[in-house]
Amino acid sequence: MEPIAKKTYYSMSEVSELTGLKAHVLRYWETQFDVISPSKNRGGTRVYQAEEIERILLVKQLLYERRFTIEGAKKKLKEMRQEGQVADALKQNVGPAVLTAIKDGLEAVRDILTLPENPATEGDGLSSQGDRQSAEGRPAQS
Image 1 (cartoon, one colour):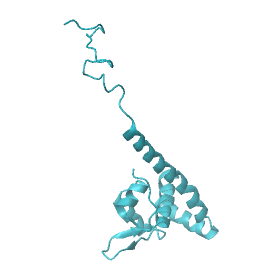
Image 2 (cartoon, helix red, strand yellow; image 1 turned 180 degrees about the vertical axis):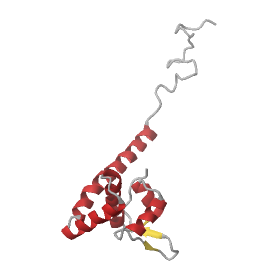
Image 3 (cartoon, rainbow, N blue to C red; image 1 turned 90 degrees about the vertical axis):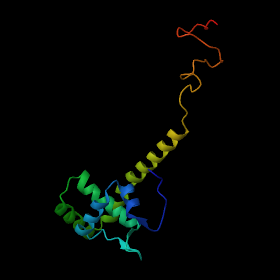
Image 4 (tube, rainbow, N blue to C red; image 1 turned 30 degrees about the horizontal axis):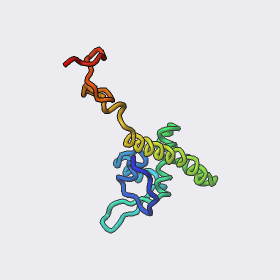
């Protein structure tokens, strides 16, 4: 996963990658949850702001982790808004997602930078000193 760049607007494909949700799920949730309402650019494509991504992650948590139905999640979001808990829930919910993205990015960098073990001795029949050896490990006779 690419590192999360702080931007003003994110495309649907970027949001899909950041949240782990497919585009059709995001489009469906727009019709079901009034807290998810991306604006559209001049070309008519959806653009999301960081706050909307946070709300998507909150809805994802309610549906996937806490196992609410869509109606139950709507009701819970309404309660949270009335009690002023949405901001707190967003802060708690986004932390793990951001940490996971950072971890994935660091693991990808590690994989790129890690060299294979003993590349000089793999399959070429030469030891690290350049001497030919037989299969038993003794010097080959010429």
